[in-house]
Image (cartoon, rainbow, N blue to C red):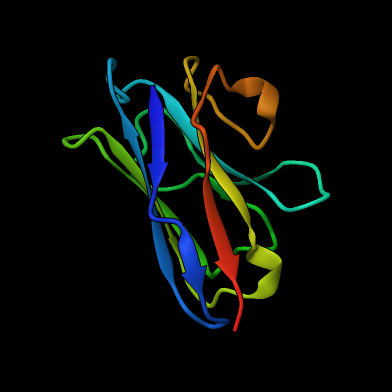
Length: 123
């Protein structure tokens, strides 16, 4: 099971750190991705980390240089540090786990999904 936390309301230019907590299995050999879905839009990939990697292997162009994904295998958690947030980042953010470990931005890569956490960027 994957559970996201850390969402909330933040002002433009602010920061949030999302966490994805995994129970019942070890993330060590799984790939993990962060996705988001804004109102009225399709879900899109944000960042992903492949099996064996502690930091992200890829970011969406829209978040490069602002968002940073990392994995803490000791805690079995994955994080998404989001900086310089703007209104376009408002969305429900999901973490997802890929049993094959060779993750990409494709939703089809992922086997398990969390319920999502809302991030709202507004003044």
